[in-house]
Image (cartoon, rainbow, N blue to C red; front, side):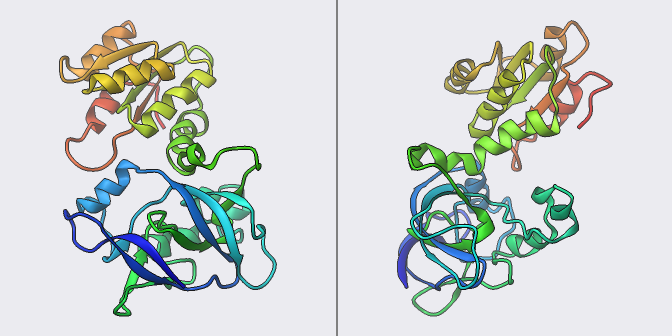
Length: 284
């Protein structure tokens, strides 16, 4: 079928909106008509070449839509289902999936970074027949997408699909970092460096877990204001003070119990500040 998508053809250039060909879903796959897509900073990292990818590529890895077709064989979703897309599409069979850690799925990682689906092939081609890569098996910057069925998570009918798009990445990543990986406990101190989509949700996760001191760190005042709305008890403008020293002073010289670096790859690196401001017994 023909659809329209925003295609990255060269690094550091604007995406090109064009018609592309999309194959129908195969076994264990579904076709989704997109309703909403998040614009994650990770997509900018792709455009800027900070993350190695095979071009041309259709970006986008968080979104929500409605299932339009289902591949042959049994499926976990049906036509008409409203779904949120997950950028990890677990196989359900490997060691990690079998032991309750689908985020580490061995089958998903390899082909995903190559811009392919689980069978190591793409469903997208351009008007010249050239293969176009998927972004994290999703490519939500396309009007229609063919994705693994395990990446399509059904949601209730009454929930609007617009806000649900970011659950596929920003919400689950930020909240999960604090709740699952960081295992924040009641009264813990938490610093979140970078108050964008993931950082704000890390702040929400810290608030949900009952953290005592939640410190949002950024260089943009409007992001620090958002951090306060999302639950930060304190904020630090990193353009005005030395981050690690300030966070240590704010915690009585101990350092925070958990620091979350929510900026990612690309300059400048904030990882040294993150490791320097945590108390000696903290690690994750």
